[in-house]
Image (cartoon, rainbow, N blue to C red):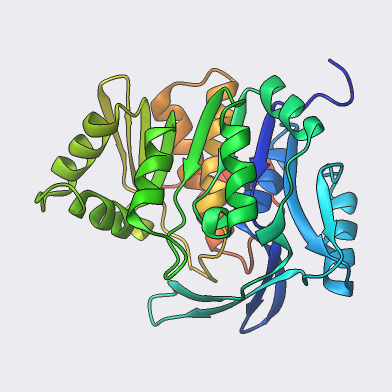
Length: 299
């Protein structure tokens, strides 16, 4: 396996989350890459920063964490992305996402197509498709991708019905939260029961693997005609920024390692809880720390 081999490609936004306690590096695709990297995978990030101090600091942080920056483009005009994140009384976050910024202008090139075609998984969200340039690049790469992993990231007003349904239709693995499930299934069905919504979405789009995260209530996985339910782990939540991204990275890691669907879901829940118990998305942890959570009583 050569040094330029990447088993997972993460495409989309890279930015700074401006939180009440300060600025933290973020953007769902790079958050996933951060956790994949510390879990032993080899991810590549395709994104774009500005020619500014914020961009330089992000690249420096990625280099320090040994996350490949080979495919991190630099924009000569637009600034590095910024998001203002505010928690509500339940520690759920609301976001003000600046536009236009550098990651709205991710350009396509041959090297990106090559690594995407050679990787096992291609992870993307809906947010990066808000602009014509990055939208075009994303859809070109989807044509090259093998296992396409959609982590739906609905942030009003940066999406529309036709885009989301098109992305779902192209995906092999789809992850979304309960609110997103309700919104998306409401576009084409009248179901109100959670399980009915899950069944309808998976059957309608023939999704091989569907994951619905339920916050403090855990998560549900539908795979190979079977349903797996995890009630979640109790932690004192610092903030929920990036916990879903960590969950996805952990789930894919365990799947790659050959764990069972239930085992992968259990590990993902523990990793998501670990990140939620700390500030920001780039939470460093060891597998031993996660194992300690796994040993605790499931809530």
